[in-house]
Amino acid sequence: MSIEFNDITIIEMDDEATYKPDPNSALYDIVLKLSGSAPYDWAYYFNGRWQQHIYMMKRRANVSGASLTIHCVPDELQKDHIPELNKIITETNQKYKAHLFEVEAKKQVDAKAASKEKDMLSDLKNNLKF
Image 1 (cartoon, rainbow, N blue to C red):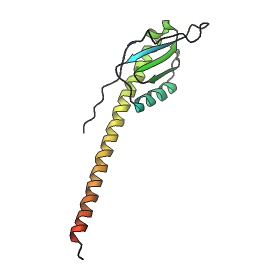
Image 2 (image 1 turned 90 degrees about the vertical axis):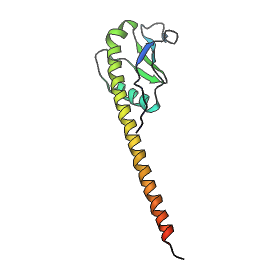
Image 3 (image 1 turned 30 degrees about the vertical axis):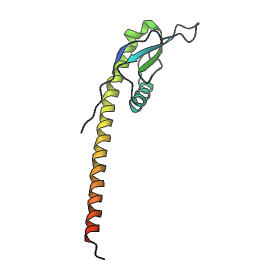
Image 4 (image 1 turned 180 degrees about the horizontal axis):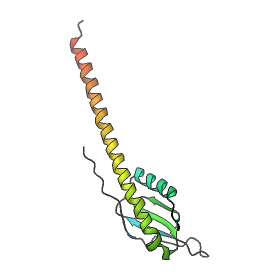
């Protein structure tokens, strides 16, 4: 079985993409670059898990492609949000690897079943008398 997946991590803040959507608010959409583009299933799991995750200073966040955007006050980012984001990212990496393992195992089971069926049909063909 060959499962190739490198854990996704936060590598830096994208100051070019970070912006303040409401000039009357202290909240920014802070964009964090990820170590790689998140596969669809990885992003889907992270986004769902983040919505369920509860902590005192919780803010809205989501992953899309190779970036994670969190809507927060810049001063909160390091102390309050990065540890929580990293917690969910670690959990998501583990869950995604387990998912890949299950997909690979199912492919192997399906391949064995297809091979067995092909052998059975071949035997049937070879034993037919007309």
